[in-house]
Each structure stands twice: as structure tokens, then as C-alpha cells.
Length: 116
Image 1: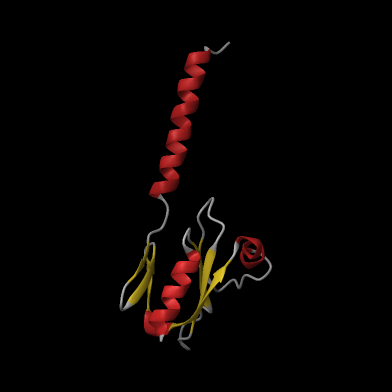
Image 2: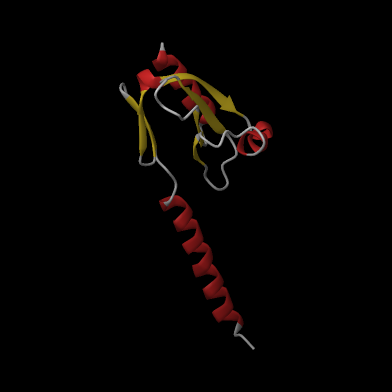
């Protein structure tokens, strides 16, 4: 039989560890005047086309049946909104980038503003 206090301590440590791992492994989205960076991947803004906000209700289809296997993807556990941005470089086999963001609508709007 396991001691109740020991069980609470171990459970708490596991929960804290899982939460910490999720935060540490979350990709940083960085947008400057020249490029978009999602985690370690980056692409010049001049190679990007229109960005669109993917709402929670559309996210399952975008990650599943609508997903092009050539796309760059970066999903975060627990984040249901996404940004889908077209790649207009003819030499790049990647048709679009699809990534999760808590502020997906804002990121898509910024990308569209910078692309002009």
C-alpha cells in the first residue's frame, strides 16, 4: 500500500515536470522585418504569401484530412488555433507553413501587413 502523502508528492512532481516540459518545448514565434521564425525554422518574408487564421473549429481538418504532407508543421499541445501561411517561392517544395499559436489571429494579421 502506498502512503497517501508520498502519492501526493510524486503526483505533484510529475504534474510540475509535465507542465515545465510543455513550456520549455514550446516553439518561439518571432517575426521581424526580414523573416518569420517558428522554433528553429526560419523563412524570409519575401518568400511568404497570404497568411490565414485557423480557428479551433477548423483546426482538426487542417491537421488531418486537409494537411499537405509537404507542409512545414509545428503544433503545440493544448493550443487549438493556428496560422497557415502560403510559401510563394517556386523553388521551395513546401506549399505552406502551419503552426499553432495562442495569438494566431494577431500573428496572421501581422504577417499579412508585413507581406505588403
